[in-house]
Picture 1: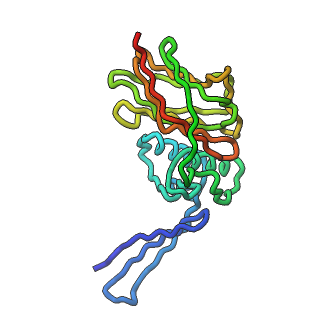
Picture 2: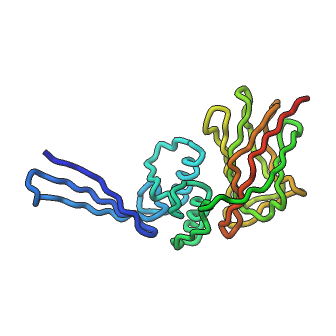
Picture 3: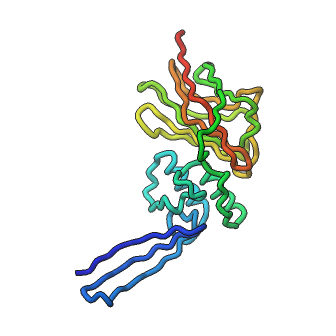
Length: 231
């Protein structure tokens, strides 16, 4: 008659996990305590690029086949796993220092103000435009396409050698796109256009839940946008 339970206590920048093993005798209890670092998503006692990859895969709904702890991945402790957590984790990996939780680098606690984006069809794809894209260093959004169409590629306009952009299918007819700066450098753009979505033969596109983040970790949200090519 042995009862095993696992408990977690979240403190700033660390997670305490302890197992309670109880026998018939109430006084016979074994407690094992484990201290986990915030950002150590795979709980291997190291915070490195593996944890960054795990969190990116989680956001993109990819199965990495590795152990994943959502509490440790929530770098800013706002209850969401998103681009803010990746930005903070990259800073930890690059600088080797655990940051103090910064409430600014999190989703807005109150209803945010929304800006407008523009989409336009080009040959074999769609361009995305926002006012003054150079304000931002990272972003994420979801895109819906018809059921017989695939998102083939995503390309930043300009020479963004310190940015990585990834996408994955997260639901039926839906993809998630995530772009990160490895050194907090800003986006480049040619005029307002800054992104090309390679979607051959697509007649309809909808982008929603677009969130752009500047180098200080402050988010700007954009209205959902849908366009249809009637030609």
